[in-house]
Image 1 (cartoon, rainbow, N blue to C red):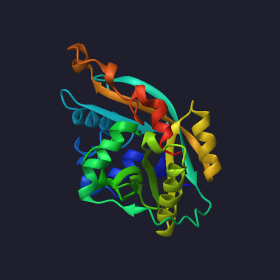
Image 2 (cartoon, rainbow, N blue to C red; image 1 turned 90 degrees about the horizontal axis):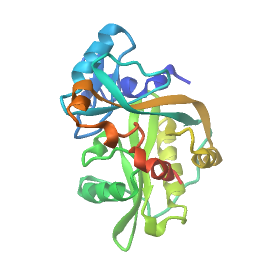
Image 3 (tube, helix red, strand yellow; image 1 turned 120 degrees about the vertical axis):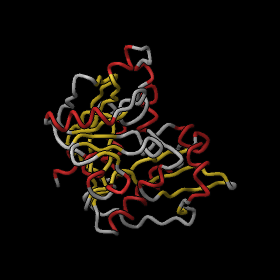
Amino acid sequence: MSLVLDRPVWSALATCHASLAEGGALARRYPASIAPFAAPADDGAASLAAFASLAGESDRVLMIEAGPIRLPPMLIATTRAMGVQMVLDRPATGVQDARIERLGDSDSAEMVALAALTRPGPFTLRARALGTFWGIREAGRLVAMAGERFHQPGHVELSGVCTHPGVQGQGLGRLLSLFVAGVIQARGEVPYLHAYEANARAIALYEALGFRMRCRMHVAAVERAATIERGKSGSTAGDGLADRGAAQASVRHER
Protein backbone atom coordinates (compact mmCIF):
# COMPACT_ATOMS: atom_id res chain seq x y z
CA MET A 1 0.00 0.00 0.00
CA SER A 2 1.39 3.34 -1.00
CA LEU A 3 2.88 5.55 1.71
CA VAL A 4 0.91 8.50 0.32
CA LEU A 5 -1.85 7.40 2.69
CA ASP A 6 0.36 8.12 5.70
CA ARG A 7 -0.22 11.84 5.04
CA PRO A 8 -3.54 11.72 3.18
CA VAL A 9 -4.31 15.44 3.32
CA TRP A 10 -0.93 16.55 2.01
CA SER A 11 -0.75 13.87 -0.67
CA ALA A 12 -4.23 14.76 -1.94
CA LEU A 13 -3.48 18.50 -2.02
CA ALA A 14 -0.15 17.90 -3.75
CA THR A 15 -1.63 15.66 -6.47
CA CYS A 16 -5.26 15.07 -7.43
CA HIS A 17 -6.59 18.07 -5.48
CA ALA A 18 -3.73 20.43 -6.33
CA SER A 19 -6.12 22.71 -8.23
CA LEU A 20 -8.04 23.29 -4.99
CA ALA A 21 -5.01 23.88 -2.79
CA GLU A 22 -4.00 27.07 -1.03
CA GLY A 23 -0.34 27.34 -0.04
CA GLY A 24 2.79 26.15 -1.74
CA ALA A 25 5.55 23.56 -1.83
CA LEU A 26 5.92 23.36 1.96
CA ALA A 27 2.32 23.42 3.23
CA ARG A 28 -1.15 23.37 1.75
CA ARG A 29 -4.78 23.54 2.80
CA TYR A 30 -8.23 23.32 1.28
CA PRO A 31 -10.18 26.58 1.08
CA ALA A 32 -12.25 26.88 4.26
CA SER A 33 -15.40 27.00 2.13
CA ILE A 34 -14.65 23.46 0.90
CA ALA A 35 -13.02 21.63 3.83
CA PRO A 36 -11.04 22.59 6.95
CA PHE A 37 -8.14 20.19 6.35
CA ALA A 38 -4.52 21.28 6.02
CA ALA A 39 -1.05 19.72 6.21
CA PRO A 40 2.67 20.49 6.03
CA ALA A 41 4.72 18.65 3.42
CA ASP A 42 6.81 17.06 6.20
CA ASP A 43 7.88 17.61 9.80
CA GLY A 44 10.82 19.87 8.95
CA ALA A 45 11.08 23.35 10.47
CA ALA A 46 10.51 25.12 7.14
CA SER A 47 7.36 23.12 6.39
CA LEU A 48 5.96 23.65 9.88
CA ALA A 49 6.57 27.41 9.63
CA ALA A 50 4.80 27.50 6.27
CA PHE A 51 1.97 25.48 7.75
CA ALA A 52 1.58 27.98 10.58
CA SER A 53 1.18 30.79 8.06
CA LEU A 54 -1.87 29.04 6.58
CA ALA A 55 -3.84 29.25 9.83
CA GLY A 56 -5.73 32.55 9.91
CA GLU A 57 -6.32 34.69 12.95
CA SER A 58 -9.59 33.00 13.86
CA ASP A 59 -9.23 29.89 11.73
CA ARG A 60 -9.20 26.25 12.75
CA VAL A 61 -7.63 23.53 10.62
CA LEU A 62 -7.88 19.77 10.93
CA MET A 63 -5.03 17.29 10.49
CA ILE A 64 -4.87 13.52 9.90
CA GLU A 65 -1.50 11.78 9.78
CA ALA A 66 -0.12 8.32 10.49
CA GLY A 67 2.75 9.66 12.58
CA PRO A 68 2.56 11.88 15.66
CA ILE A 69 1.46 15.38 14.71
CA ARG A 70 4.16 18.01 15.20
CA LEU A 71 3.30 21.69 15.43
CA PRO A 72 5.24 24.95 15.45
CA PRO A 73 5.12 26.99 18.69
CA MET A 74 2.50 29.41 17.40
CA LEU A 75 -0.08 26.64 16.87
CA ILE A 76 -1.94 24.58 19.49
CA ALA A 77 -3.85 21.31 19.11
CA THR A 78 -7.14 22.07 20.83
CA THR A 79 -8.26 18.46 20.52
CA ARG A 80 -6.48 15.23 19.68
CA ALA A 81 -7.76 11.73 19.04
CA MET A 82 -6.63 8.43 17.59
CA GLY A 83 -8.21 6.99 14.50
CA VAL A 84 -7.65 4.13 12.13
CA GLN A 85 -7.27 3.98 8.39
CA MET A 86 -8.84 1.05 6.58
CA VAL A 87 -8.59 -0.04 2.95
CA LEU A 88 -10.76 -2.25 0.77
CA ASP A 89 -8.61 -4.55 -1.32
CA ARG A 90 -11.22 -7.11 -2.28
CA PRO A 91 -13.88 -6.50 -4.96
CA ALA A 92 -17.02 -4.59 -3.97
CA THR A 93 -19.12 -6.12 -6.71
CA GLY A 94 -22.78 -6.76 -7.37
CA VAL A 95 -24.13 -3.62 -5.69
CA GLN A 96 -27.11 -2.52 -7.76
CA ASP A 97 -30.10 -0.50 -6.65
CA ALA A 98 -32.32 1.61 -8.87
CA ARG A 99 -32.81 4.14 -6.06
CA ILE A 100 -29.18 5.25 -6.11
CA GLU A 101 -28.66 8.49 -8.02
CA ARG A 102 -25.72 10.75 -8.64
CA LEU A 103 -26.07 14.02 -6.74
CA GLY A 104 -25.42 17.39 -8.36
CA ASP A 105 -25.30 21.10 -7.65
CA SER A 106 -29.06 21.30 -7.23
CA ASP A 107 -28.82 18.79 -4.36
CA SER A 108 -26.20 20.70 -2.37
CA ALA A 109 -28.60 22.33 0.11
CA GLU A 110 -30.23 18.98 0.91
CA MET A 111 -26.82 17.34 1.29
CA VAL A 112 -25.72 19.98 3.79
CA ALA A 113 -29.00 19.63 5.69
CA LEU A 114 -28.60 15.84 5.91
CA ALA A 115 -24.99 16.20 7.03
CA ALA A 116 -26.00 18.76 9.66
CA LEU A 117 -28.58 16.32 10.99
CA THR A 118 -26.33 13.26 11.11
CA ARG A 119 -22.86 14.89 11.47
CA PRO A 120 -20.66 12.55 9.41
CA GLY A 121 -17.76 15.01 9.69
CA PRO A 122 -16.86 18.39 8.18
CA PHE A 123 -19.25 19.10 5.32
CA THR A 124 -19.94 22.27 3.34
CA LEU A 125 -21.96 23.49 0.38
CA ARG A 126 -18.80 23.08 -1.71
CA ALA A 127 -17.89 19.61 -0.46
CA ARG A 128 -18.80 18.20 -3.86
CA ALA A 129 -15.65 19.84 -5.22
CA LEU A 130 -13.73 17.00 -3.55
CA GLY A 131 -15.43 14.17 -5.44
CA THR A 132 -18.66 12.61 -6.62
CA PHE A 133 -21.59 11.89 -4.29
CA TRP A 134 -24.51 9.52 -4.62
CA GLY A 135 -27.78 9.43 -2.72
CA ILE A 136 -31.11 7.72 -2.14
CA ARG A 137 -34.44 9.51 -1.89
CA GLU A 138 -37.71 8.51 -0.30
CA ALA A 139 -40.85 10.46 -1.15
CA GLY A 140 -38.66 12.99 -2.91
CA ARG A 141 -36.50 13.63 0.18
CA LEU A 142 -32.77 12.87 0.32
CA VAL A 143 -32.42 10.30 3.12
CA ALA A 144 -28.97 8.82 2.57
CA MET A 145 -25.75 9.71 0.77
CA ALA A 146 -22.14 8.72 0.33
CA GLY A 147 -19.25 10.20 -1.57
CA GLU A 148 -15.55 10.82 -2.00
CA ARG A 149 -13.20 13.13 -0.11
CA PHE A 150 -9.38 12.83 -0.22
CA HIS A 151 -8.05 11.68 -3.59
CA GLN A 152 -4.51 10.55 -4.32
CA PRO A 153 -3.22 8.72 -7.40
CA GLY A 154 -4.65 5.23 -7.08
CA HIS A 155 -6.57 5.92 -3.86
CA VAL A 156 -9.89 7.58 -2.97
CA GLU A 157 -11.35 8.08 0.50
CA LEU A 158 -14.94 7.00 1.09
CA SER A 159 -16.55 9.71 3.23
CA GLY A 160 -19.67 11.75 3.95
CA VAL A 161 -21.78 8.63 4.33
CA CYS A 162 -24.89 9.33 6.36
CA THR A 163 -28.47 8.20 6.78
CA HIS A 164 -31.46 10.16 8.01
CA PRO A 165 -32.47 9.00 11.54
CA GLY A 166 -35.95 8.19 10.25
CA VAL A 167 -34.66 5.45 7.95
CA GLN A 168 -31.68 4.10 9.88
CA GLY A 169 -31.58 0.34 10.27
CA GLN A 170 -32.55 -0.30 6.64
CA GLY A 171 -28.97 -0.81 5.45
CA LEU A 172 -28.84 2.30 3.27
CA GLY A 173 -25.45 3.38 4.60
CA ARG A 174 -24.02 -0.07 3.98
CA LEU A 175 -25.54 -0.15 0.50
CA LEU A 176 -24.15 3.24 -0.48
CA SER A 177 -20.74 2.51 1.06
CA LEU A 178 -20.34 -0.61 -1.06
CA PHE A 179 -21.74 1.14 -4.13
CA VAL A 180 -19.27 4.03 -3.89
CA ALA A 181 -16.43 1.62 -3.16
CA GLY A 182 -17.39 -0.29 -6.31
CA VAL A 183 -17.37 2.91 -8.37
CA ILE A 184 -13.90 3.75 -7.05
CA GLN A 185 -12.64 0.26 -7.84
CA ALA A 186 -14.13 0.42 -11.34
CA ARG A 187 -11.76 3.33 -12.01
CA GLY A 188 -8.84 1.15 -10.96
CA GLU A 189 -8.40 2.89 -7.60
CA VAL A 190 -8.39 1.62 -4.00
CA PRO A 191 -11.14 2.77 -1.60
CA TYR A 192 -10.14 3.65 1.95
CA LEU A 193 -11.72 5.34 4.97
CA HIS A 194 -11.06 6.68 8.45
CA ALA A 195 -12.77 5.83 11.73
CA TYR A 196 -12.17 6.39 15.43
CA GLU A 197 -9.94 3.77 17.02
CA ALA A 198 -12.19 3.52 20.06
CA ASN A 199 -15.29 2.68 18.04
CA ALA A 200 -14.96 -1.10 17.88
CA ARG A 201 -18.49 -1.46 16.57
CA ALA A 202 -17.82 0.69 13.52
CA ILE A 203 -14.50 -1.01 12.83
CA ALA A 204 -16.18 -4.41 13.01
CA LEU A 205 -18.76 -3.21 10.53
CA TYR A 206 -16.11 -1.98 8.10
CA GLU A 207 -14.35 -5.32 8.38
CA ALA A 208 -17.63 -7.05 7.58
CA LEU A 209 -17.83 -4.90 4.43
CA GLY A 210 -14.37 -6.10 3.45
CA PHE A 211 -12.18 -3.26 4.71
CA ARG A 212 -8.97 -4.19 6.52
CA MET A 213 -6.91 -2.21 8.96
CA ARG A 214 -3.95 -0.41 7.43
CA CYS A 215 -2.63 1.74 10.27
CA ARG A 216 -3.47 3.96 13.22
CA MET A 217 -3.94 7.68 12.49
CA HIS A 218 -3.36 10.76 14.63
CA VAL A 219 -6.05 13.42 14.27
CA ALA A 220 -6.06 16.94 15.65
CA ALA A 221 -7.85 20.26 15.46
CA VAL A 222 -5.34 23.09 15.38
CA GLU A 223 -5.60 26.83 16.05
CA ARG A 224 -3.23 29.72 16.63
CA ALA A 225 -2.10 30.08 20.24
CA ALA A 226 -3.03 33.79 20.15
CA THR A 227 -6.58 32.89 19.15
CA ILE A 228 -6.94 30.61 22.14
CA GLU A 229 -5.54 33.22 24.48
CA ARG A 230 -8.10 35.76 23.30
CA GLY A 231 -10.87 33.43 24.40
CA LYS A 232 -11.82 31.98 21.04
CA SER A 233 -11.56 28.71 22.84
CA GLY A 234 -11.00 25.29 21.42
CA SER A 235 -14.02 23.88 23.26
CA THR A 236 -15.90 23.72 19.97
CA ALA A 237 -12.99 22.36 17.95
CA GLY A 238 -13.38 19.07 16.13
CA ASP A 239 -10.91 16.23 16.17
CA GLY A 240 -10.37 15.89 12.44
CA LEU A 241 -12.92 13.21 11.60
CA ALA A 242 -15.98 14.94 13.04
CA ASP A 243 -16.87 17.29 15.87
CA ARG A 244 -15.92 15.90 19.28
CA GLY A 245 -19.54 15.82 20.42
CA ALA A 246 -20.51 13.85 17.35
CA ALA A 247 -17.85 11.17 17.50
CA GLN A 248 -20.33 8.35 17.60
CA ALA A 249 -22.47 9.88 14.87
CA SER A 250 -19.46 10.27 12.64
CA VAL A 251 -18.81 6.55 12.52
CA ARG A 252 -22.51 5.80 12.18
CA HIS A 253 -22.18 7.14 8.65
CA GLU A 254 -20.64 3.91 7.30
CA ARG A 255 -23.42 1.68 8.59
